[in-house]
Length: 153
Image (tube, rainbow, N blue to C red; front, side):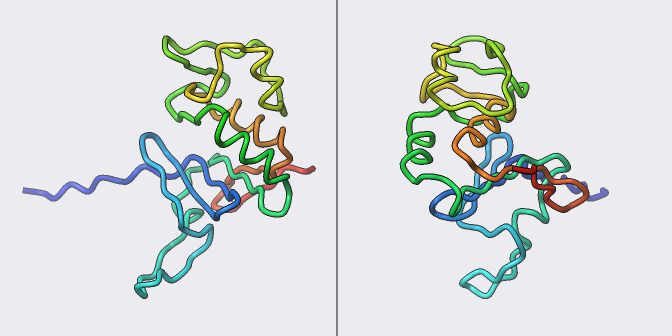
């Protein structure tokens, strides 16, 4: 019988918050890794998140760029990213819905005024998530051909 190899799903979001790098994909998240190759404390070589990122993966970095209180507020009170939603969709308790007005950048307070059903237990698509990151001043980019192409400020 032939052995079947299943390709693991690639990362669809990589970010650096106040406590280091993390990555996510549908139903899986990881934290404590690095963007680039590194050696784990056990001596094991790790490829880093970027080596396993999907084409078009969203990357955001807040280190040294945003107010810690604004970032913490977004993480604690803001909605959660879902890779199962379309970019401009959100879900609270029911079916997915579109945001009132898709925006390149938005603050959490603006988003909640325009979409009162979004709260800390809501899930949002990558378009909304990226707009919220830009809204706090995060450096944002996308993986293209295995490298990060950062958006201009």
